[in-house]
Length: 107
Image 1 (cartoon, one colour):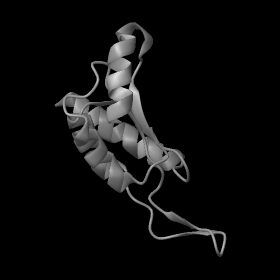
Image 2 (spheres, one colour):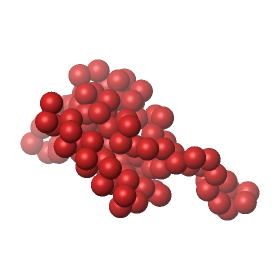
Image 3 (cartoon, helix red, strand yellow):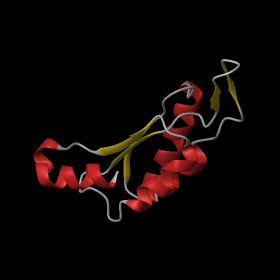
Image 4 (tube, one colour):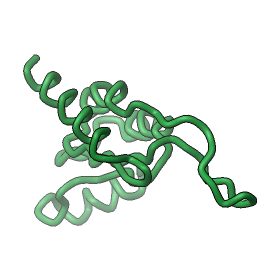
């Protein structure tokens, strides 16, 4: 994300809506956001996957899903302004994320 951030600064904020992380393991999100320092002036997009791993040998998902809403507050504290989900994140997960975002914004 550091390279994208620097290129975004050179392009000017008029062309940049946000800088993001998509379809990544939720474990990587917080370290990636922290690595950007102050982050972009526009904010971050965070769309992690469910946290499961794809087993290429057996062609199936393995591991446990993560409750993304437990992490969303930390992501917002680090500058995430757009939060959603990618692979294997369903409507109930998005609803839970929405509730977390609403609670965060009330404080």
